[in-house]
Every structure is written in C-alpha cells, then in structure tokens.
Length: 291
Image 1: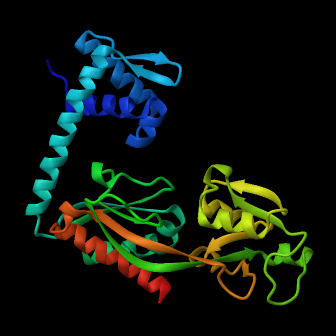
Image 2: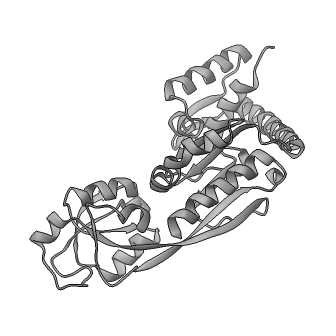
Image 3: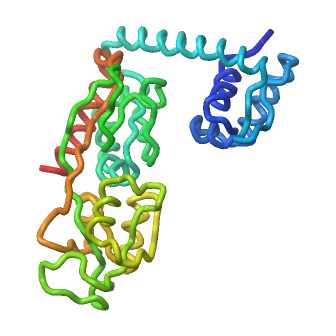
C-alpha cells in the first residue's frame, strides 16, 4: 500500500464538502485534479469510495470507514504541526495571512515589499479572499476579519473600528444632484452586495435606510462594488480604505456604521516567532490606515 497523505487529504476534502468543486475551492486546486486524485485513490484501494447522491457526492460504506481513518490522520498531522510551532523561536519560515480582498490588496499588499526587506527569513503569503479561512485546520496562520471568532482555540485582538459610508462618483452625482451634506436621496440607484451576502451589516443598513431604492448592480466583493461606483453605476456603501479614492465622493455627514476588525490566529502559534512578527506587521498596516 503506497497511499499518500496528500491523496487522503483530497478525499477528505471531498467527503467534508460533498462535491469535487467545493473541495477544489477549499484546497486551492482544480476540480479535475480533485476528481483525478480521488479516482486514483479508489483504484489503488480497489474499492468504491463515492457515489452520486441527491445532494451531491455521497460516501459508500467503505468511504465512511476511510473518512474516519483520514480524520484521525488529519488530527494527528495538525497536532504535530502545532507541536513544531511551539518550538519555533526564530522569525524564519512560511506564514500565510488571509484578509478580506479589499483590505488585503489596498491596506496590506502595498507594504509587503518593505516587510520582505526587513524580514528576509519569513516567506509571507497574503491570501486576499472573501471566504473565511479555517484557522483550526491551518488553512491560514493568521487572519484579518470582520467576523468575531467563537472558537476557544483562537486568539483574537480587536484592531480597529472601520467606518463605512455611502460613496458615489462625480459623474453619477452630476446626473443626480443633491443638497450639500446629503446622503442617499430619493431617486438614487444603488450598487449593493449580492443577495447571498445580505446578512452583512452594510447590506442590512441599505435595506433599513433605502428599502424602496432600485438596486442597479449587485456584486460579490467590495472591490467590485468600488469598481461599479467608479464607473458611475450608483451609490454604495464602502469602508473608508476603499472609499478614499480620488474618483469617489463620500456622501452624508459622516460614517453610517462601523465594523470591528479583528486579528486572529491559533492559540498554538502564540510562541511561533515568525507568526508573531507577521501579526505585528498586520496590526501596523491597520494602524497606519486608521491613524
């Protein structure tokens, strides 16, 4: 038997997600690669692991048994990594920092080059994405996020209260004039997040304060929302780090809401110096932006 942990890890991702496409997204590889690896594992073991079901892929009886074994191996691998991290007292090695797309690209990315010069022994990878990485499963080492973590094994630090306000482009405002200091007014067209993101505080604010306005554009990310506003598509809610753009104007007397931004990492990484160096770097990026 030559089954590798990499093959089992791919199978486990499919078993957890219920589909090859969702597993590919979680692993950061292509769907054909996921399907090929799982099929190769099944051939190697000589058993059927998955079958199509009403809600996606379902585990066979043999697949359920293999999943149990893979889960135990996964826990052992995570425990071994954490044990090694506790021994790490040097600022060397790879660190993966995840952040919301706009925050990562606008606030953190411009300072990566300077960080690399200051800490050449740390291989810092910034992952700018809308998904919330699972830090317990080491999908990332640290996270900047607007969601307050609930897991006891995670260490959390509140970095800032980020202001959000309505913005629009001068081009849009020329066609939709208003009194100085006015916010969203009757007749405004909105740029909003997609319905699947309606639980976000900025979406909730728009529903409460502009319930009868027409939504002209819907997007999945705040960067796309900013692009639509710059194109003159309407009025939308942005955090100040995205709204602070020469092509946009803030509407109203001030922020309409604030969202807490947290720095989060696993408790086992508290003594990993490379992680703490990146934590201080991430906090300084936010401090510079909010100072």
